[in-house]
Length: 153
Length: 153
DNA sequence: TTATAAATTTAGAATAATTACATTATCAGT
DNA sequence: ACTGATAATGTAATTATTCTAAATTTATAA
Image (cartoon, rainbow over all chains, first blue to last red; front, side):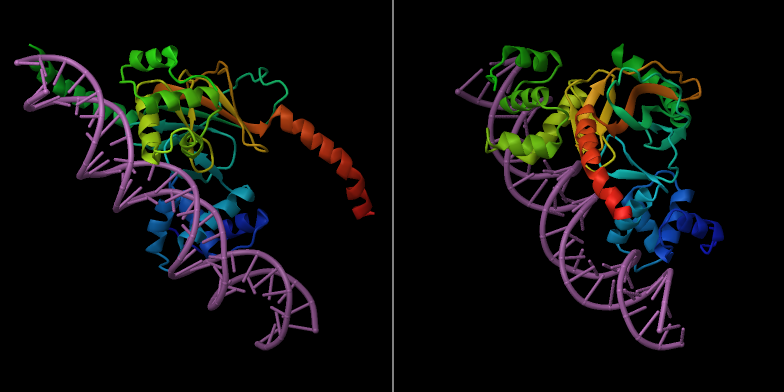
């Protein structure tokens, strides 16, 4: 783990127009090192580093970060909100097997059907199976196909 | 409000492979008549019609509907999941002013950057200002522009 | 430094959202 | 009707989020 007195993080916080604090440094650092965590993941993991951290601080901090444009909120189709340390417009793939969320570039598309709507932000969401899980599932299917056929026979 | 003994709804439920029940009829009917409600909206509104309805029944029912392919879940970027009575693949626009969610057609785009990922479902999400709110906001800006200039002067 | 005001953090309570599981109802085959 | 299997429902517990008000930290300026 990197040292938390990272000057770069501190500057990023200041430049975004909010005050730096240890909690903010910790959480921003955590967000950069972890893929799309939920509030609970942040809280549970960072408690080990900073035992006085409260849940409210986590929620306060991520909300502040979002308002400052440092991160974005990501509601997938299940309960709980995920936080994405990349605030730029991009697309997301979520694996239905392992739940992992992957970032990828937003492809070009045409939005002329949205006449009269003022577009501020776009996000393409895709669900499916990620490469890691595809391999695992293929292996399982191959080994279970014999069982299945014997069941049917 | 329509009568709930609607034969069409009943058939739709049966055809999707699940058993019909009064709660399911009520909730499917509600979903068709309301735009992307949350579990709480469904619960609160339908309690007036059926006071014995429980929150769990709402969650159970929408989950069953989703598995049966009758509806889809929609996590926007805040807490709480919305339910969409249209299970076909389409895109969503959410107004940041009034919160309303609008459906629209998914434009064509290219996903070749997702090599190795098995794509099952796509959903384009767009945030911005809807036509209704644009008009309201324009009106406000015009009336407040004089105040603003006097403040600055 | 030290005083000050404003912003941030905290624990804990309150509320909202969701799920687990025991209970009750329904159905298909006798 | 009766029985076992499956499905539907609601109570209670769990998880997720926000609120409150006091304590601490921060930036600024004397």
